[in-house]
Every structure is written in structure tokens, then in C-alpha cells.
Amino acid sequence: MGQKVNPISMRLQVNKNWRSKWFASKRNFAEKLTEDLKVREMIEKKTGSRAAINKVEIERSPNQITITIQTGKAGVVIGRGGAGVNELKAEAEKIYNTPVRINIEEIKRPELYAKLVAENIANQLERRIAFRRAIKQASAATMRSGAKGVRIEVAGRLNGNDMSRREKEVQGSVPLHTIRADVDFAHVGAKTQDGIIGVKVWIYKGEAR
Image 1 (tube, rainbow, N blue to C red):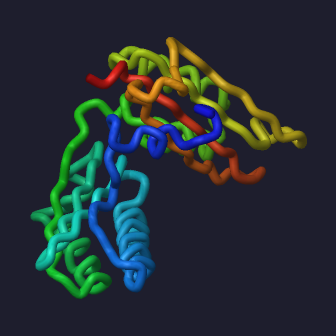
Image 2: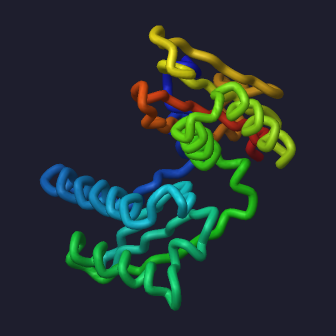
């Protein structure tokens, strides 16, 4: 079971929370969901991979929408004199037609966040760095930062081989079946000349209290 379900959705309300917080009736649920997806896509597009965005949380209240961006490089998202944030705010208000407030949360140790680790590996694979070296370095850096365990899987035409295959690197323990275990997960695609290589990262940070 633990290997077939997204580790984050499996732990909702135990030690993980929803990334969109609002309630809607059946009539306008699809419309609100589409707006959220458009805003997330817009933020990814405007900031790019250099901003190292881990997640975007959206919370709706009757008169305002609050967007919290968790990033490893707050300066890139904020921009010079706050220009970056103002641009994101203006674009989001066009989509929602409601006043928007944007909060920026800076991540101190990006090696402990699965999405940032996966994006780092994907960027290296796109620059034609050997996959084995990339995943070994990433897993070692994560363990040095204080993780209890890390598991990285890459799948596709690795190193340009004709036959696609799956390789993995595991350090420490990653208990996928333990619900109270704080496991972060991300899946990112690396667009190489030989096709897309999938990168999956699980990071175990210990048991939630």
C-alpha cells in the first residue's frame, strides 16, 4: 500500500496539510480548482526553476485570498524592490478577481525538501551529468542535513541508453507504511535529449509527535 499511494496524501491530517484551504459547493468547486491550478502554473512560469519553490499554499477567506510561497531563494521571488512579488500579485488578482495577499517563506535547509532535491537532480541530468553521481551526491547532502533516510529513484533512458531502466539510491530508512512517519515526496521530470527521465525523491525526517 505504501508504495502505491502518494506519501503526502496518505498522511493528510496526520502530519501533512492540504495545499489549498477552502470549501466550495458542487456547483463552483471545479471553477475554484481551475483558478488555483492556473495560479500555481503562473507562479512556476514567472519564477522558473531558479527560484527553488517547494510549495504554494492557497487559503481563501470571504474578502481576500492568501498565497504562501515556500522557497529556497526568497530574493529571486521578491525581486528588486519587491517588483517580483507585485507582478505575481497583479497576475493572481486577474485570475481570481479578488484582492490577493502574498507571503514568502524562506527555507533554510533545501536539502531536506523532496521537491528541491528532485529539481536539483533533474537540472543536473539535463546538463548531461552522470545520473549515478547526481543521485549519490544529493542523497549524501540530504543525510548530512539531518534526515533519517532518503530514497531516490530515476527512470528512463539513463545516460542515453536505448533501453530505459530504473535505478535507485537508498540511505538510512524510509518507512512508507508508517502513517506517523514524516515522509516528504516529490516527482519531477528531467527533459533530456533522449526523452524525459523521471526523478522521484522520498525524504524521511523522523516520526511526527
